[in-house]
Image (cartoon, rainbow, N blue to C red; front, side, top):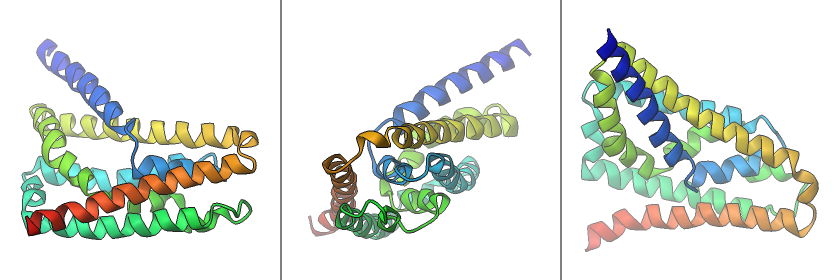
Length: 211
């Protein structure tokens, strides 16, 4: 029992550390959370939940050996191209709507939970992370059986939701500083992040096919 509890404690600590180090990195989900948080302080909660809706089934699939599917070249190429195009569209749309504070929901005209789903699926390197780092963590969790896998999923998803909620709440509480040019600059930066990631995700598989 003592060894089991020690392994469980190690699993929780490692999962929390790795998960937070990943979620703190700038990316499409963070950009969307900042943008949606301007109007809704709870947006990050729902974005995190949408993100988790996609992650939990994937964790289960990888736990039972299906993660290798995402390592196949045709799959990664298709995910990269489709995800890149989606991020390009959303990034351009966000920049295009930067002047319209009152109608700022139009830059991402979807419920926050759906935004979490879209941003997750549109990020090819999310799949790559799970096929590598995530898979290694899941293998560790599976040493503790289904309980270990459930604890891993709960800790990882909680880190995502907690950080996204913190970001959207903080953004919403500071909107008094977002007037005029500041609002535009923030949305330009968020849109640019999505465009840069979109170009990279779209271009990488095409470059790989050509060269």
